[in-house]
Length: 517
Image 1 (cartoon, rainbow, N blue to C red):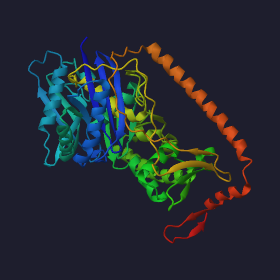
Image 2 (image 1 turned 60 degrees about the horizontal axis):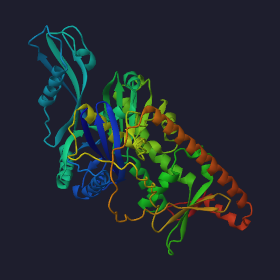
Image 3 (image 1 turned 90 degrees about the horizontal axis):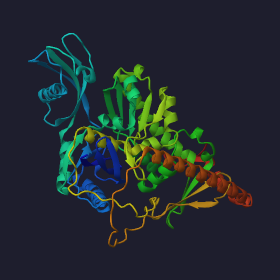
Image 4 (image 1 turned 90 degrees about the vertical axis):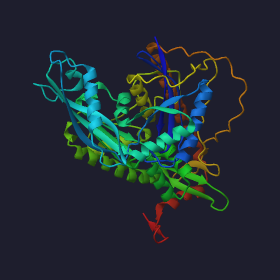
């Protein structure tokens, strides 16, 4: 069985994701997946190729070094914002009406409809097309799967086209040309991400897929197994971080780390978390600041409400809002925000679930590959597999099997700042700070490399059970430690508890005066 290796790059506004997968028949084994902060990308589009090149090249070099391979080409995703929809039709008179309609004829009709579509604006380019329905002599609105094999004198098709900026495509080409890597395919990712997270029943029954990205939030509606509608707004997790920076007067890096560690929607549903206060220690001039987690949640909720309401408005405009029997599926990095699913459900009335990558891949304990933010890049792998994309490397990868896994590193919140959590009316009992990421040490000669054996379904189920058990034990241990810490807090002098009174008032940025809550 011939093996191929697919490398996919997701160009996000806040981070870049790169994965390498081995494809052998229907089996897909994820060999590598890592993310790193991006640069030069705004609203999912490259606006500064020179800045964007640096982290992309670093990500590629890291993958090549770790896997002992040479990447020759990659598949990448197209921008999700500034994309408009249009319709097109195509028809063909069949020369041999007695023969069944073939899949090749359907593909030829698709290409004909795309090729004849008039793009009047010279600054636009066709990002992709989706067949909506087909017609024959006697049948109308036939889906693609059913029309193949039918007999008819003619074949007509209706298509939905997605048109975007040509400049956004050119900047992607420029980045990878400067790195020296070819682009095998460019994908309109709203059409590929569904392959990784949605089930067959969801797509046929009607579902809205909301991708909560860093620089853009999009909704893709599927009905009867076909992508029927797409819309996006140029707001996302990056705007939430900007609001925290503005309201709390802290750096962007610190705001991002605080958002990841303590961010949540719906402050009234935080339970005991709303009592926590983050103490940020700065330099000698600034001293320290204290940010209540509840106030942080209020900031986040305000922006998330604005984003979700905009997406729900787009769903209403689609004319398909009444047909979403399977509700909404949220995916992307923003899907990990605490209470975001509950908030969307409260605002929309739809059922909501988090769209994690389906079990269509085998992997060997690769960190992050099963998270919602990996769905985009994994969807491109699935699409490239179906499109018979040629192998993206010129050397067979050999993966380290016996070497110990490197411990995951949590980025520091800030080099000049620490975060400590305290409880209102009680003193701080423990310092909470993330360790600095150590500088890369020089690596010596690598050990002999061998292929990783494929993981069987039974082994994967066993590993998942063990992982859930370990997580449960870890939670129990954390609860025990918090209970012990609470006992120690009883011995704290009462004068120190008055710190919490600082938060019984709010600061008016317009007048510079304190106002009672």
